[in-house]
Amino acid sequence: MLPDLDDLRCFEAAAVRLNFRAASNAVALSPAAFSERIKRLEERLGVRLFNRTTRRVRLTAEGERLLPQARKTLAEARACLELTGAPAPFSLTIGTRFELGLSWLVPALAELQQLRPERTLHLVFGDTPDLMDALDKGQIDACVGSMRLTSTSLETALLHEEHYRLVSAPGLREIEGPEDVFELRLVDISGDLPLFRYWQDGQPARQTWRFARHEYMGTIGAIKARVLAGAGVAVLPEYFIREELEDGLLVEHLADRRARSDWFRLVWSTGHARSADLQRLAEALRDRPLR
Image (cartoon, rainbow, N blue to C red; front, side):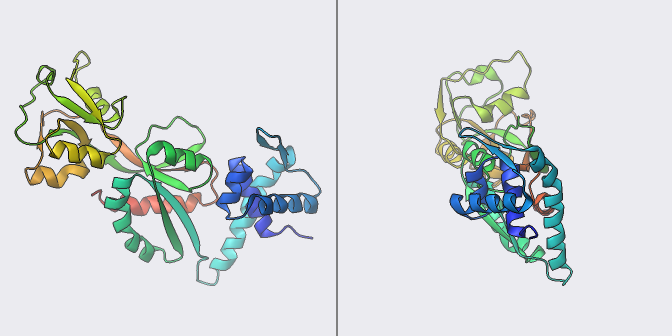
């Protein structure tokens, strides 16, 4: 008998993630049903496709040879549907931080649906470590963020450059250099000061910025609320405080200096079955300004 397309889809999911539980989540099957499909495919082909232990999953030599052909077969099956002029429906699950998702991605959903009616986008909200863990486990297809990436098994597409500003509420003492912050509170995400690091990296190397105290808020929304309340100073993304700066609710310090910028990126696992669709999604998101 010929291999079943759904069995090949399960094989491809497991070959990319090398984790049967994550792969079963990705194709919306129970672990038992997923393992049964892999077993059925192995029986039809007469070969073993995975070496599994309690600690790891690896492709066999036969599995390595099958993977490119399985991807080609699945792509051809999708092309058969598209020959009718009606692209096959599909969905993508995208992870995002709360503030970025609510201010930028959620308002974009209606337009993105119009661009590609066959595509359904699901959003998952969380902080960066949780999103990267979900991506690694195959629980989401991609995530949007400016996270630092070290893995070589990830693909990325640049979306928008992210600029940062040193700000406070009006009435705080004017900051002209590091000597003016000794009595001030710095509000940031966490103890390693990820936002302030953008500012410090853009300043002369020998400058030392020592604040009277630090306060950690976890999200940029909470940081902005604290700074608006006069709690201290913070480095925040320009897009996120543009209206407050224009309305005079926040003031920028050292406006003639610049922090190191970063990029929002769409990130997904190398070899993802929908890589081409994720690239097209990135192109559409680049056309929408940050807000």
